Length: 495
Ligand SMILES: Cc1cc2nc3c(=O)[nH]c(=O)nc-3n(C[C@H](O)[C@H](O)[C@H](O)COP(=O)(O)OP(=O)(O)OC[C@H]3O[C@@H](n4cnc5c(N)ncnc54)[C@H](O)[C@@H]3O)c2cc1C
Ligand code: SF4
Image 1 (tube, rainbow, N blue to C red):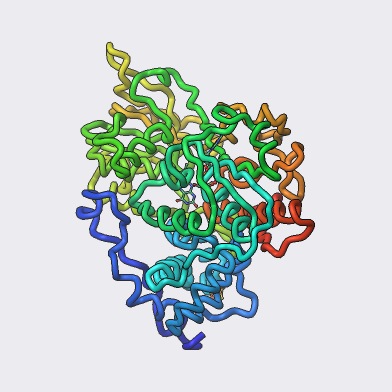
Image 2: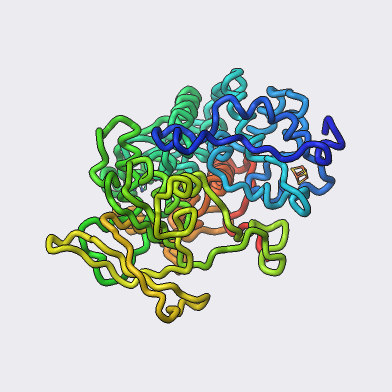
């Protein structure tokens, strides 16, 4: 804490976003390049270096936040990068994508705006790459043990990096043609440009991790055969079995799942496609689902040139302030948040029928109707109360040529047969069951990330990857010095 009065003298200042009119014409990240570094040391100086830093507890990685705030306030980037990487393999991912439960838990947030922890994190991560403080760290000795990691999302990548650095020979199997999981084909480039992924993958290759893309375990290689080839297997296949919308008209053309719509849009950015086959250009788009996946569809549809975009949320609009009874500090509160995509849609007037930021709250879809060719044309909805009962005389319709379903995910995708081939036990909600040491009922097979926890966040996925790596290392060698930031049953802080 270079300035003990920093929190009293310096107001919170965020990394400014580019003007809406400029950023919706490209797919680059929404922030103004070069505008974070000049402000970030003063922002880090707002940290009070609390005796009990709740920010640290609110982060599943146990990030050493007060330490790196102090180092950034002194502009000691090398030491800050060391402390940041001590608990997080991929801070450039979380610094861009995390909803920052650490900031909700910040002690300063009790009565004034929290420290900009996420911006401090991304500033350190980017400086570390620029200044060469994130070199490959190959192991000094190989253990002679082999591990297959199935799935290359943040869980699989974190597990693979930890195990490679511990000296094991690790191969990551990925059914897509590129590495990255949902960070590659789900999350749009305007939230995180893909060169951040490439940079880490190159680092991991240089450390010795092997990558095998376009290889679905269960389909291209049998899961039992894979198990026999390796000393241990980590399943990190995510939870992408999507929820369905059970209303009349679901079968009409133009009604798609968010994860059918987002991947081709990402492939346009990768240069694989000229135009997405599901492009929203010129269409009236309605997104059903008020979460982040829906917001990603919104930002994508706006950039594709939709005629209008409306996002429906079944929940009532939350308040601007946390409810101290249901969401007291330091929990992550349900409050009204304006993502970059909502700001864009609001400013551009993308949804004339909706409130200022393109969302319709407390809206429940009744049915979809189409034209003579079976193409969806209108969405019929009704306003609902807190018990989801329709409000009288609240029915209305919206024009809809493209309807995107962003209703969440129910568990791991079963299409490849991996779960059946290994005879894996499942939890009642469909996720892969595991014991306190991340082990499944199949000997030598471990499960981590969304596949076992259910849809979560990048920060939890990295924590899962680090923790399962420690468990696998112990299984292979009898003990482990790798950190295990969470247990399989840990959950975010609630009341
Ligand atoms: C659209 C969208 C946006 C999101 N935005 C955010 C955000 O901004 N911030 C945030 O914190 N979280 C976000 N999330 C959640 C976050 O992306 C996930 O929690 C996280 O990616 C889970 O990591 P994972 O490694 O467990 O699984 P995934 O990222 O899903 O990766 C699993 C990988 O396994 C592969 N795979 C599956 N089966 C097989 C098989 N049989 N053989 C080989 N490979 C296989 C898949 O192809 C995939 O690449 C978002 C989720 C979605 C859907
Ligand atoms: S809780 Fe906030 S003020 Fe306290 S140490 Fe963490 S970041 Fe600093």
